[in-house]
Length: 162
Image (tube, rainbow, N blue to C red):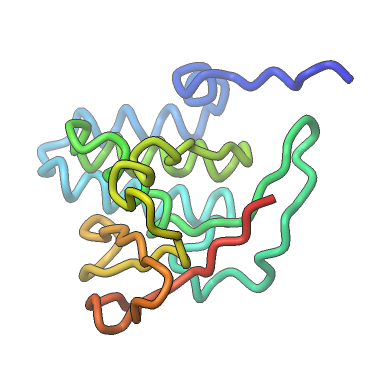
């Protein structure tokens, strides 16, 4: 089986006329980067039917994405995961656009190194998410035996590794 070739983030934006126009319009606007990100978030969620929160996902079963497996994820989760693995890339516009790209193309980011550093020898029960709103979301790895609500999380997704 031949691995599927995905466009880069830039190629995707350039190939989608409406998306390219919206991103250009936002970047050239007088809006703050955060407000630009929120407008982009609303546009992307509606245009590509992307779930905003874990509650918007009806079925978390693994899906065949061609040459790999993909478990559905929301924008809140993806933004938080990107912040967890790339804390230096905190531009809200980047976080929103990259998250939409990953979800739309059913691509998964590898958090294994960061999770390993965080957990040490302890087992991962799942991922908790806390914060007020999508841009402020934060991923909290929940160790076996910990309570996600005790850690201040609003959402919890039990890890099911394939």
